[in-house]
Length: 268
Image (tube, rainbow, N blue to C red):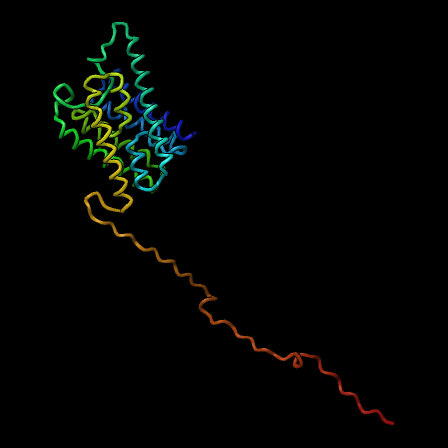
């Protein structure tokens, strides 16, 4: 249960900080990108030792399809990730409603993802799907690879990867690569956000599964097969091994027995 609560907390922080920066701070593309990236980086080091800091159903599906976790844990992770994202969106909405001049969520939004004429740069569904698939695939491949090595730098690499993807795709879809992150805000915004939610649930999930399968099969991103290097046991050479064993001759017991001194014949 401890790891599920950790996933809830981590997803809450990611959505609260990332989407909160969108609606509260006028920081522009780079500021929003850093908010998401640094929030994820912090969670990797904070809850990583407890749950692995997936904070993303697509990541959990990737880890599961890569054979690194069981089905029971994968389901538990995903449920609590959605709960965390929903709670974060609810808290943001409650805070925004406390604005003295009022807040129109239909106009201001809640940091939700989307596409079309009324969103970002006005891109169509196909470019949005292409971006979400490629971005999610890259993101999860990086996560699966970097967590095989030195975990001390894993958080930095993962966080910076998410930030770079946000710089690239904010005008296209707002960058989901995370079904839970899209679900929370869309649930409260409704309307177009809910109508378009299906894409942000399906495409990142499929990309995550394929990234996991690709890693499990040890395939490269370009489609080439990676060759596994066979590890040969190192030969240990010792002086004892170099020298032939000393053969001891068996000496009969009577040879080593002390000799009896010869007695002079007695004179009768």
